[in-house]
Length: 172
Image 1 (cartoon, rainbow, N blue to C red):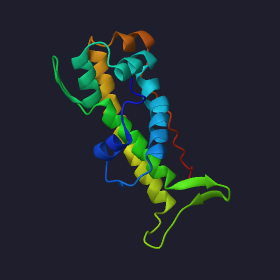
Image 2: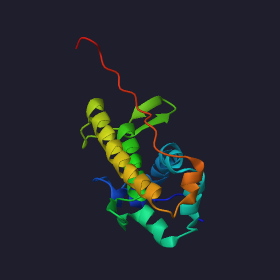
Image 3: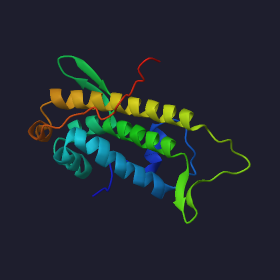
Image 4: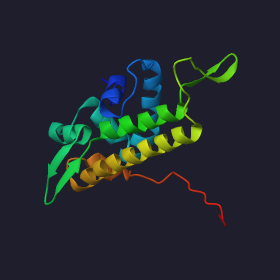
């Protein structure tokens, strides 16, 4: 049985450019967070476990996980849940920006060969990655709702919920 739907090396392969020298344990932590906070609430625990354990209709599982084209009454192009998950993880990695908690407090490691990216730029990049992930996730959920191969999803009533808040200043 797998622990996660993707591995740290999958995150590097499925998303934008990232350093190959990332700490795998850190990436696995982000994978766990993204699965629990983004994937499981959207598809439900039963369907998540089905995909994790590779039970049920293998072709439907593969299309949902890896993406492809669903040939129904109207073709649907799907990027796949793995790619959505990878972008959720990427967004979390960008937002953290190499910061860690040490005995000296919350620090950001720097060296003489790297230039620090401003927080606003990091946040914009993280938000963009999350929007991409949401788009991929909506494709997958559209496929799940149209296909008859996922009774677990219909039974649990899962789906994407908008958990992001936008605050606008009045008069600006």
